Image (cartoon, rainbow, N blue to C red; front, top):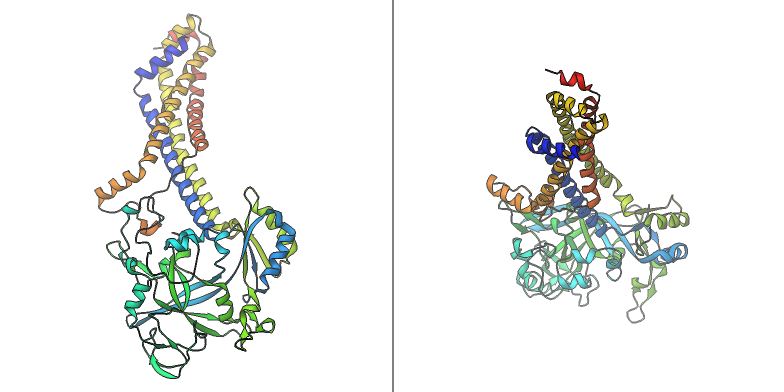
Length: 522
């Protein structure tokens, strides 16, 4: 009992111990905050990456792809069908996006991705990143009349985000206002609407380039659209000096996409598309490069369909491309809940030769990025834990001072019958008490800081005149945090262990004192 009483007395009267408590508190609080923020960033990043990448991807090593996606999916079902939830074929190719801004023609490199609108949303979270509510329910490459989101649907509090006023009139209303209601010339070969009826040879104004062209068919952009495409939102928007979002293109505008043809040698081809929606994953890598178009259209434009397998339309006598066998570049695969994607990956790899196909999980495709984040978290933890280690050395020095100062008291205790272990227990308990108080206050302070971290960031931004956390840079509207109880418990336990370890040497010195020598101490 006397050990606890003396320990409590030292804790309450020795104000020098407050320095050790503060050091432990700051170290623990800092580690709690950093781990919560890093866990939040990691979760958000993985969630957004996984939102566009399915659990597994089977890819052809050939840029022109492999023939007959349905046959490949049947082979996948044969070897791993009981583990698979859904599949969707895709085609992708590097391409160039072009459109006019006033009299200037702007081009940008993109990844052109052909998707099956019926199945693609079943293997990814693609749908929830679109800006029109109907497309989030079911994707269609048709331009909507209106109703595009003016507020960010992904924001926790959309009313706190600056509205996108330009989106208010997007859609057919915007398209009709931009293009007068007259007939324009289609562009013939390679145009997205070369199959439209009503061909006529006449000179007309091309609404895309503003130049005159010989019409092969009439096309009225006020009533018709080209093949629809979904642009990554960063391809068509920018932030002004005031931090507001402005758009260079809107749903209803036409763009030109140049891509290589299939076959040998590849040749540059182009087609016109109408922007029907924006894709916003909040990951700049994706939002600044991805353009989605209907899979079958991309296969037709690039010549990825085997015409030998096509049939003749009896009504028109023309080749019906929709019946032909087409090439694909990848098959997106999602597995059932609870199934390990790596296990399914290994099953599929045995079925498809490695020299022709690549089978990978979404973690495999982003392995370098995920490993870098994990390494950064580990290094930060090591550096921050050194703060607590410094506090441990402070405890060690303070305890040595206390042992020297209390030498006569130790002699009195031992002369009254206190054992060496009892004296050692006093200082060990003192060290544990410092660790418990410091870690406890640090955990509470760290959790409170995490709870109000966005409010604190806003306050600091107002005081300094610059935003501490700029959504235009990080593409998060708030600082993401996730508190993991086991991590907090390990941090607190580590801090208490360091405090106890730091008190061992002074405690052993006190316990080894001879009572007569201690009483004679001056």
